[in-house]
Image 1 (spheres, rainbow, N blue to C red):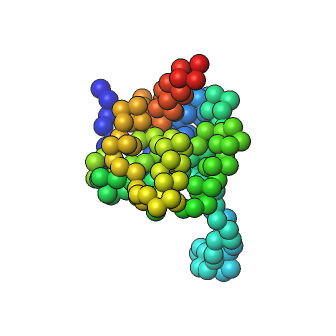
Image 2: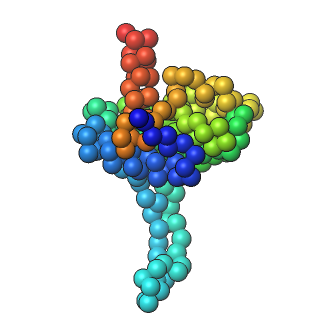
Image 3: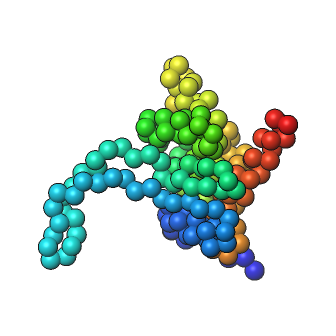
Length: 182
């Protein structure tokens, strides 16, 4: 019997972290969370906690790794808006990083979770780019839910500790893209 993890209050990034550990354990992929560089100014001597600091520079994206000899980079985004994914959720430096990543042969994408719908999707860079360029040309500032919520982009729960099987969704989309190109 499968356990339903939906609605248990665990954050998207925690689910991805557990999934990534399981992918590594099974030898499927190596994907790591990229920390934002922080300059520490003060540490509480008693507790060892940082009491003052700032971000040194803008980070890249949340995750970078390798799957089946393919470099992947992605960011995890949650939205409580059920009808669209607002492009304001993506910072310009993240978009530019994914653009550079893809132009250098990697696969870039977002994992988008519609919180109120309890649905999670793989959003390929190409879709993000199309709407981003449209926004820059005065078009809409969001991606409609029905563009993101395609069956082929849906991320389902995997087996065991693979809470969000985004690699399964990525693999399906790579196969379909290769069939189109081939």
